[in-house]
Length: 157
View (cartoon, rainbow, N blue to C red):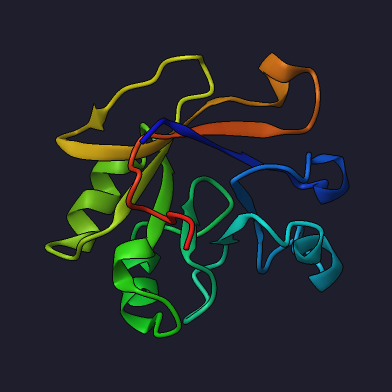
C-alpha cells in the first residue's frame, strides 16, 4: 500500500475535504464542533485528546501545554470505544522517551512531530507510524501534514 497523508488544523474550515485521514481535537481550546467533523464524511478521523481526559479520542497529544507522559497509560487503559491497536500518541522528539517509559508493554502507535522536514522511521527504538514533518511554518498556512507509514493503522474499511 502507498504512504497516506493526514491533515490537521486548529482551524478545521481551511482543511481540504478529500483526504484519507483528518485529525482534529475532542477537547481543549481548539475543540472541533460536530459540524467540523461532519465536513469529512469520507475520511478516517483521528481524534486528538489534549487533556488526557479518560475514554476520549483515539490519539493523545503529549506535548507542552497538553497531556503528559504520565497521563498516557491512564488514558490508554480507559479507552473502550475503539480497538487498542488504533490508539496513537502524538509526541515530539523530546517527549518520546518519557512516553515509552510510561506506557510499558502497552501497544500504541507513535505519531512523531518533527516539523523540520525529517521523516524518521523509528525514534528511541519505537517504530514511527506517522510523522508530522510539515507544519504551518513550512506551509505558510495553519495546516499540519503527516505522512502515515503504517498502512494497518486507521485503514479504510
